[in-house]
Length: 399
Image (tube, rainbow, N blue to C red; front, side, top):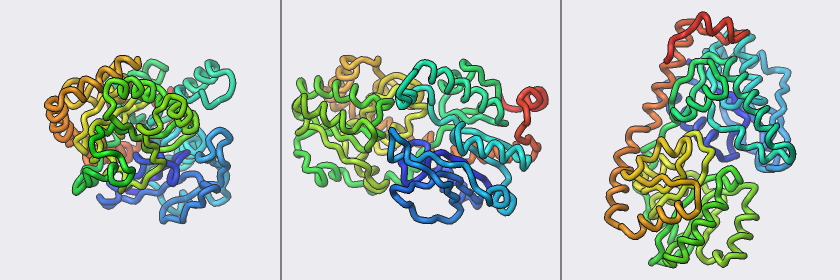
């Protein structure tokens, strides 16, 4: 099978979407399928050429220079699609290259799949004006794009509910990205302390993700300030970078947290897995996650999790078993962390449960589910519809 992924972000940019694309590509390739990726170039970092990766010219985003805005123009694009002989097109965003993929699916009569990775209306703070109007417009764009697709993939049931709420009528299936469990073997439990000179007696709290407003990291720092007041032997490690990094570092400076918070910046994948293994507790404050892939990774390393109860985290954390879910207040979050730190036996039990529960979301299993959807679409010739109302009357095959 030849699968075309269309995405508005790709390596070297780091995000849950990019990680998902990498994992599915690896699993599909392992099973003998071919994956072709159509994504943006990154002129500021000049990424190397890769086989089966087609990059469109792009411009750095004005408010996020590490993110590129692709220009969906290529004189060879249609010929390239024909030459490859794609069997299915799978888009990973409803915007620039996602629209290009949708048009290609319609033109070449190919099935169209869309994974709704992100609650896009929660990112309108990057638009410097009329946030509420922008939020409504984004919801309309997402709804209409979903209704042009044969299948919409949602990483969690809560996202399925969200899509129905905004008016999506296309068939929706719930398939998470999954975790590459083989990565979480032979890890170094001292990696963070050895590499960042964290005192031996410190209990390490870990966050992995973009340092953007939507990740709610300032909330985490405010919670940590209270945690540190009551438990001085704690240390917070933030892995990642993003547009709010300067704000977060300034907060640490003003509030005397510099010696207790480590900013690692972006780390290579083979270092991130060691971060999980060398922390004591994973803390995740985001309320915009459709899945919370990093939570699954933390569990695969045996880390108990404290997360705000919202969307993806609410499904991936088994409250009271492998972690705790809290209300979205700094007091509630700090109290949950402090409760676990005060109960090593509960932490140990949650760690053991996290390792067991992570087995149920392996990337191999999730990839097999996705391939089954592709095969159904191809064998039944469920081509990308010109108009949704024609499609909805003819094809109904997933609940």
